[in-house]
Image (cartoon, rainbow, N blue to C red; front, side):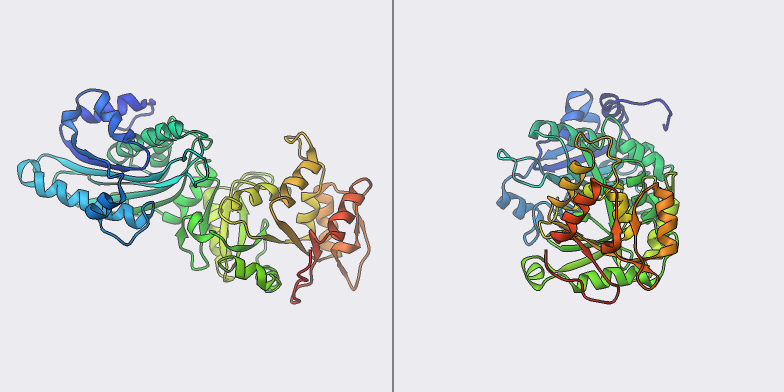
Length: 445
């Protein structure tokens, strides 16, 4: 039934209702029953809906799905999915299993509370059969809700849920086709999918790492995270309350020096910062956006390969849409209030302080304010004179410098006025620190 013609949410729900071969249950916690609601209001719901349930009370939820897990977590979602699936098959397999493709849709969501103080996110999943009596396949998503009101967030969850059920039955031909269906009638301004887990023969041969990079490249997520072991995990779990060292770059030529920048900067994170957080974490940052030295947007395949190469250095990678440091700091600020240390070379710092922020009313001053207001410090590492010359030429930056033993350090740079005044202030206040590879970064500032 795959088609190039866009099908609206109403029509998707109705077409499933009118297909007697698909029958399933719905269990939703935390954002109304917006997915089941679509199937109940479009007509013909008796052809699809075996049961709907919403275990809002914690005691009821524990009684149904077991204790010992957070209520908005992958573990709770999996417990819900397993319980609902077993109940569905126990009640209906003998009666209609020979002609029915069963499914169980589940979600557990923390939509915006009345005070607006909670993290608006959730877990959404579906278990389904591709043919009657066939093996089960699972899709599990972690989502972030971006709408400003609870009602709008509920609406977005409803659309996503219908899209997901429709996608697993009609759009598993390729990863791109599947993801595009999930996001129909939605946008990154409303909802973000930053983690996908797939199980079962329906997804045999799919590249899980490539799928996650595609989420960023296709603007379905602001970022995805790979651990140092190459495992994809939700950013909220990896970054939560960590003192972060982020090393952004293009990484055309990867060497041990890149790992040394993170290692040295991590070693310089003050003990009090580590004690007040959940420890330190160093990560490389790869942007999907065009860069001065890479003027075309990189493909998902290129970014995935670069992330795999960086993994060999022993640190994880944050693949992000943003190329500006202030946007990277705003993103990780969702998950941690600890200081963020950027480990960068001179060229990244120069690029950050160029007057090129045409989308901001305050231009470079606003960008600098937004960056450093997020408890950020730049640890800036030296470059050879030849490398710096090449980068200055690429950037069109008119910075002068002096050379010390063939190297140029942050304090050796001098931009034109009035930028020089801002630059000297950032150096003097410790927001920009001149760092040396292999030496502990000073903890002041």
